[in-house]
Length: 174
Image 1 (cartoon, rainbow, N blue to C red):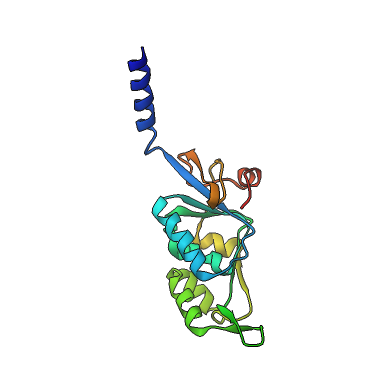
Image 2 (image 1 turned 90 degrees about the vertical axis):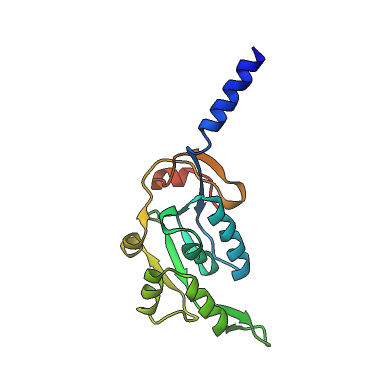
């Protein structure tokens, strides 16, 4: 009896290995240090997780667009991407644009995003936002019901490459 129960458990476990995908939801992320986000998103890329952008993803958060494959990202109607030049604190404590870091950041983005940024004057200290129809023309809309989690506690959901706005609202926020 124990043998059959164990065998059944192994079969069920192995049969679900390829059928499950974790989903990470990004919302209300104002960004931070570029290096921190590069590390975080490289891990996300190698995990194969799907990314749902369901709210603000600004500054270094937008590195996700270049780090995670395009087909693993979807956007809800609430998605709002904010782009600006990279900066450091100057001698007097004020923000000073860092041209090298700005160029590095810009080069991480996929070409459609770089084109969109260039058409709006490039990365400057002023934040520019990509949202709504413009954003949904570049990334697939989230459409399937699923549960999502923050990157710190990814939750496995069966075959869930995307999520509906209603389901995203109901899931845990980032």
